[in-house]
Amino acid sequence: SEAITAGVKGILQNDDEINHLFGIALETPSNQKKFVLVNDNPVKPADCIIKLPSYWEKDLSFEISIVDRNNLNQKKEIIKSKNGELRFSCPTFALLGLIEKD
Image (cartoon, rainbow, N blue to C red; front, top):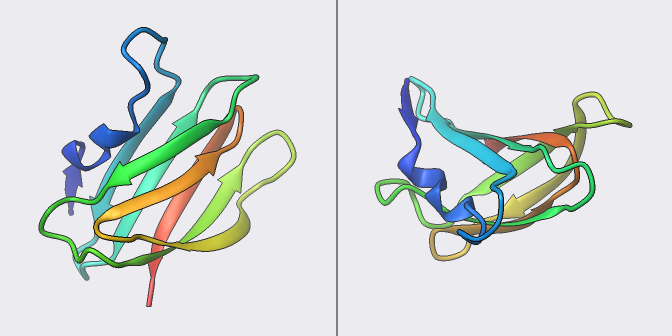
């Protein structure tokens, strides 16, 4: 599999702030797309806009799972990209896994 760090560049916050959001995009040998994101800010959720890598389809669906103070790998929702962008909120002090769904 190939790690695609350029695909998550769009999640970076304002340059004047400390960056609390980190992530990586992955593609499995079977071409399933995945993201892992961490918001290490203990008090402020992060509004995420992720630009999908240009060679991925522009409209994909991802199931979000969360690990935080109250959840351990809890499946939350399915989100859909529009025109190559995903938009969602990452809760405080949380790890999110996004797995492509059919």
